[in-house]
Each structure stands twice: as structure tokens, then as C-alpha cells.
Length: 102
Image (cartoon, rainbow, N blue to C red; front, side, top):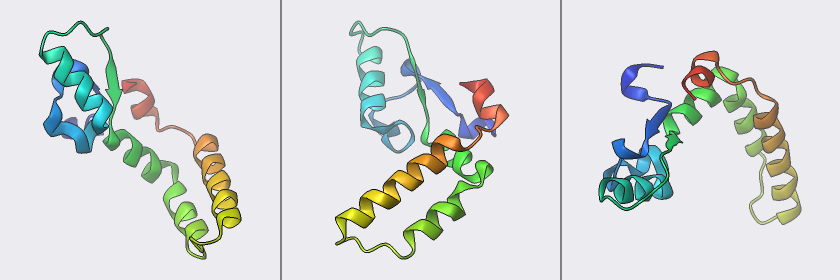
């Protein structure tokens, strides 16, 4: 993964402007850390890592295929497809470089 697309960032490296990269909770942890509030040291696995994982593991097209016939008004179908997608993600192999960074 290129340097500008880090898989992992430390709390001290992020703030509220990084929500697209680290989510709201991650950004809040960064804001608190940078404000000097006592927060245990830690890191965030970024959205870049997630998208890289989806692409390199080959699950993106499988997920899209599962979603194609989806009827959002059919809660039973929604649950069934969600479980299938969860299984795809859980069974996929993490790219070695992403795993190394984490």
C-alpha cells in the first residue's frame, strides 16, 4: 500500500478532519489525544486498509453480485445476504502487506 494510503495511523496523527479515513470514533480519539486528554496509546486501521483488503482479496465483485438482486423491502433477504457477505469477508485472506502494517 502506498505511503499516502496508510493501513494504520496512530491516534496522535489524526483529528476531526480525518473522519473519512478513520471514522468518527477514530477521529475523536485523535482529537482527545492531541488535546492532552489521557487516552491509552493506540492506532486505527484505516478505511484505506479496508478498501485495499476488499480489492486484493477479490470479494468486491462477489459482494456486488450478492447485492444486485437485493430487495431492500425484504428483511429476510436482507439478513440472508448480509450473512453471506459477512462470511465472504471473514473467509477472505488479508493482503500480506496490510497484515504486516497492522
